[in-house]
Length: 226
Image (cartoon, rainbow, N blue to C red; front, side):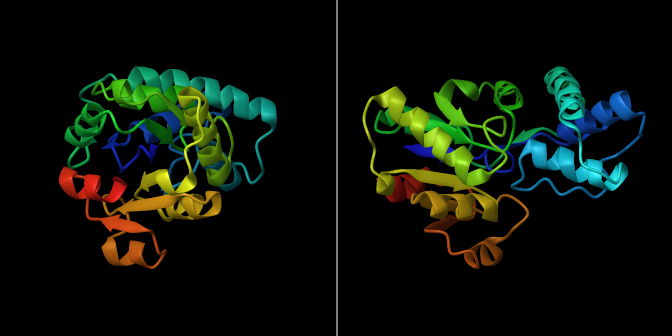
């Protein structure tokens, strides 16, 4: 079982998320450009909403406010991601070739483990038709905590296969230290890729089981997961 993070592991939306977050806060609270210096790396969508609220409102969001923001955010994101001239959308090196190789081998089941809420996750993958490679996932709409998201993905993958895959045969692929930490806390293996904010040396400090500069070398990746 292979679990993939999305942002900066599979793709980069080019700031579409930032536009959608800004729009949501503008419509609900009338505040412009709330994104500021927000660092979304490895964070769930809920955590990002909460961090922005603490900065611009000086308080936590009420649940109804969060639901209103989320509804607008999801709607705007799904619309914006289709606009080719908005942002600098691109796939990470080796994608989709690696995904095609893994699916063709018929030896692996591919899932997601992402901090994105589910609708946004599938919208991102739909931009370049990547959703067809993934059959299940754990999402930021399932939990605000990364380990719980990974556990949810594993549970859904096992249910889909109708068998228990042992932890040593489950891999979490991601670019952030939160991915490595979540894999460790759930007892599975981690494959860190230096396509995000952290370079190879910085990722090594978090002791992933395996580390790659990117996902362009399909054979090397296969040698790890086999």
